[in-house]
Image (cartoon, rainbow, N blue to C red; front, side, top):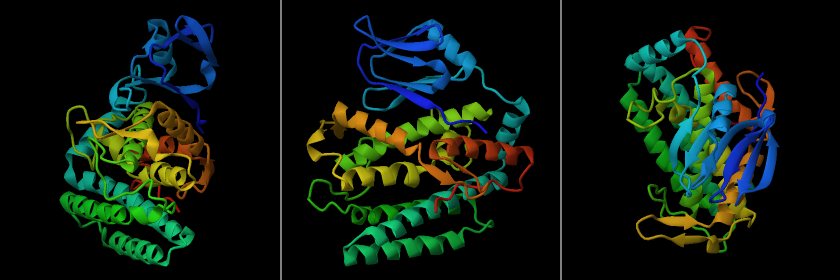
Length: 343
């Protein structure tokens, strides 16, 4: 079983990373500020004006350490992954299945089941943890509607019908999201999902962490030998990692939504850390970005029991496991792709 390795996130503008012996050294203003063993690093993510030596980049490509470049505010720019591992026959089968809508809809259906089941869990847990009776009622009603929707996800549905159900009940979920915010001090109010750009602090945190999550799923796909760009639910679009976004649907609620709610409800983030940026929505300060990344890394260390394998593992390892399960399905080991449904 693959071990969950750490991700090195570099925020400091002007930082430069280089390889010295078997370590990565982060230099700021030509002075070494951090030294980490490469053996313990699974990925490197650079935000904004951060440089990396060609020697380190080449070593990471050989060792399967993914390097990602993001804007200072978390928008994906580029990635260096080296050679894609795995058998070319696996990717050929992935392309064949993606082109066959009957096959594609089955995998898309599994991803949607995982997503909606996790939404249902978040809502039911939120209802149990909420002291406001009105919020409890609203959360329970939406959870029950999603439960009924899961029963309608039959194999006979078309891909467009599946997408319609996914979109409808994702909107239902977010219609109740404000009831999951129990810190009712007026600092954080969620009135609906907005993105590109996010229009409030809650959406800014969700969008930022969804970008982090998508990057993890991209690495999981590439590390398994799958093509992250060719999806089943998310169809081909230039520059979009369709398969990474497909698998990401199963993890939005458990890895991002619950984390953002926890940070708000525990008072770990403040509304004063967010400012309106004309034309670019709402931006958070660097301290809050670092808090989100540190909290995201900590969340990935939590232990869960995989519902299909019945094995305990860190949450951060589950995306890699799901990519491998999908690869095994494509190879014919499983009749269907078993999604990760958080309970």
